[in-house]
Image (cartoon, rainbow, N blue to C red; front, side, top):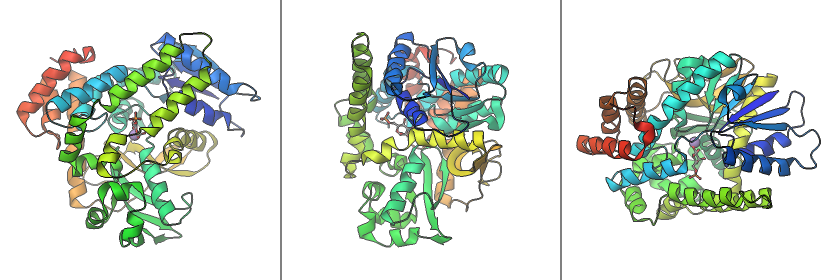
Length: 445
Ligand code: G6P
Ligand code: MN
């Protein structure tokens, strides 16, 4: 079985390869094709993978190419994990918004819109080529903003593209642990958009255990999201929001903290990873050790500013590193081997959320088998959540329109209609500011 990884020179690729190395079962991945636009990054990551594979019998063979069409041909699965504009682009997304006094963050608010405007045209090109060159491949989309990008790709690939994110799984596991439940036996009633969802229940043997958590201040104070949002607010909501909703519910505090920070998360990662790829220019650098050191540093500072500001404390390492590659592998195995699994994924709505049309990509528990991912029926969202979901989906649709037609007016509408952008004038200046710094936005007229 052949797995093609787009963004194959990316920093998280060794996590995926590490998970593949642990898979000894029938029908496992035998060939990995890395694609990247940057040959130096490809060679750095290829060296890390070679060291990971040392001594592992039958380790999946790795090849690398900068030719996208060559990478796609013959693929059974395509992981798309690209970062258009690189971490420099992310740092600019964050900086321009914060300079306007609105949230500058990778995927949420103005920063996320800029990222989406840059990424959608590239993702659509990948989707078109995949439909032509590997029509039977399944595409697993990690590329952020994952919900929006999955929806853009689904217009060309239908249900053969499935979006993933590690945050709902991590949240579900943390809640299950606090409740003393086995996360693998619990059903997490979670729904929304990517980075904009709520856990409304956690069922074990058919019983909802979440009310027990919401009623217990000590339990609420004992896990990350409990501390991040505070017991009172969680009880008021009657649900546990995805950590990214902190940017909505405590927007003013976050924006202030981010503006006061020495540098943004994107700028930190840009500098940190530049050091790794720089070190790797020397042929004698021990690749795996250099990668591992950089990874540990990254995890230790994961969203640290936000957490510290909110008193959420450190994230347990296991929650972060256990997510990304495991969800990807679980999804791939369920599809490839027809092993049924329930996973929270980004798929087309069909009729799941009645306030959205059938083609809107949402994040929802899905039953996965050889026929793909099928959203399960969930309880409707309460009004306040439906309101946010519809507002943000409307913004995403403006981004898709702008990317499809090059309409600057659509881009201005995307920013202006976002709940975290507080003036049309700010939206206009954001479009000016972003087009000035991102060559990838030159298509907007
Ligand atoms: C989580 C989210 C990803 C996001 C990442 C940012 O894993 O699910 O969508 O890209 O956090 O982490 P970083 O270390 O890049 O700030
Ligand atoms: Mn995510």
